[in-house]
Length: 217
Image (cartoon, rainbow, N blue to C red; front, top):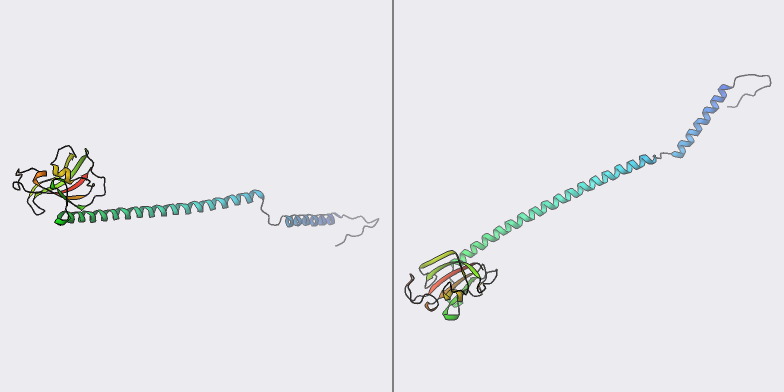
């Protein structure tokens, strides 16, 4: 649309034309500005969006780490329970085996003859420390006459003494040498290393048959 020609003598109000072209220029300027900006997000808004994203990422990471920690704790707890259960089973089996061994009499040819005719046989070798001279020893024992099938003359479940101090008969100090804690040993003590011809319930001059479990040394 072109402007109307103004003649020398023609007087008219061109306000409408000026307003129209002014609006056109303003709209063009706005469109150009928008085109320049495009969909660009203001810096402040972009920073906030990035911070929100980072918060979400960190939150998810913490949740994953928490789940992994809980899973590891559950696995650790499960493994500990299984270990405890295995230890219980092992302990029960060891007790049953020990009872069987305690009831079993070793063959005579398995006994080792030592000083003063004292004989011994390890029914179960212990896994603990070895008996030391002059140290306190705690044992459980059964005393029979002559053999494993002999008459029970004495017994003790928590008997203590010091090795090498003469607190027990020589047959014990000889027969218990190098025994390990937790072991079971059968000892045959002849009169010369025991009570001589004294009758302690099984008759005069009989061999003494000890079944000894070393509890502590």
